[in-house]
Image 1 (cartoon, rainbow, N blue to C red):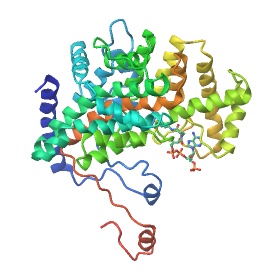
Image 2: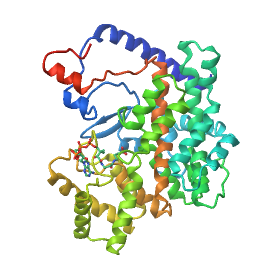
Image 3: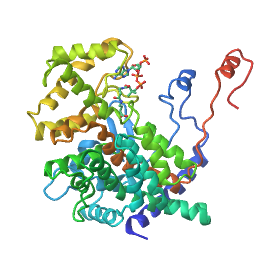
Image 4: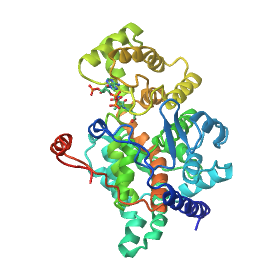
Length: 440
Ligand code: CMX
């Protein structure tokens, strides 16, 4: 076994024993109550999942194995001459629960390089789609085509002891993560760059190679990709992409199928697709007002028009967070450092000053503050990546790190099939009248 795999197995054995004892002693303790409103309204606030890789605090934001984003920026290893964390290091931290050394991060970079070959049929499947297909459709189709390579599916079919599920799941997770930058870059170059492709560079790190294969040579764009791939990687377990990956994986669907399912959820406009919606919305505002730099008064009116038309303001609000998303802040800091005079970033910052009081005044929105998607597009546009329909693919590549590290833990901890109870409104009415007990 490889070094990381051995360490992971040793840690999983310890965790398994601890959880067994914990459940033996405390398994009957209640960790929450469920109201009727929660059952009808998106299960907000119901604690019903265990996800080891990160934890979201409504006021403070995300912590990856206990570390905030600024702490990761300080403590995770960087590329030579770089200042942003390498996502390889974050993956190590999420998988093993410990900060990596530079040697650990380099090791993951080289393992991912070694495993990154994408078979030709994957590109043929992508090529079979019309050029008008959305990049997320092409990306997920590529991932589905890659499922032919699943070790878990093959070993399960051959007869795999349940104690060993974690082993091929781990290998699939590593293979899949390694191959995603090539698939993403292929989609980008096929759709937007005349189908002219760029071969991977065996000397680059994972995010740097993604930038390279997409055709972006600027060193600070590579730095942006390292930051981007780090901050979008995980947001605890209940968000649509993480929860879907976990749920589908609980049926013992292999990591390719599980991740593809999760990314179909990421492609929804209330989740990851909001990153394209933000830039689309700003471009439409610029066009309507015939200016690249709308004033705060103009922005205010445009926001009010958006709300009056029954639409959401993309990039604002969150199901759990109740303050400005630290992922937004990290990107704002990157913008202020690398492109302080960029007009589009300036507009994003003016929107940040304008939108929250308007949303707050509506009285129904629980979080009027920006989320991760409110800023990412403006940074990408600065480097010439104006094809906003592609943005969710970048989010998806990053999200693989969190959801697949979690999937390794799901199988290592032998989490069972997920199957919550549902009720009908007819049954609820009977229960309210005291005629039927519905939660048996
Ligand atoms: N603009 C307008 N209305 C909004 C809003 C926004 N940005 N955010 C919430 N609301 C509305 C909701 O639609 C809901 O309206 P109704 O009661 O009429 O149905 C009401 O405010 C209450 O919603 P909430 O409890 O505050 O928020 P939810 O937990 O239901 O939804 C989210 C969270 C993210 C879906 C929502 O804030 C939203 O639609 N935001 C815009 C889309 C977006 O940026 N999504 C990306 C989230 C981050 C990510 O996953 O990538």
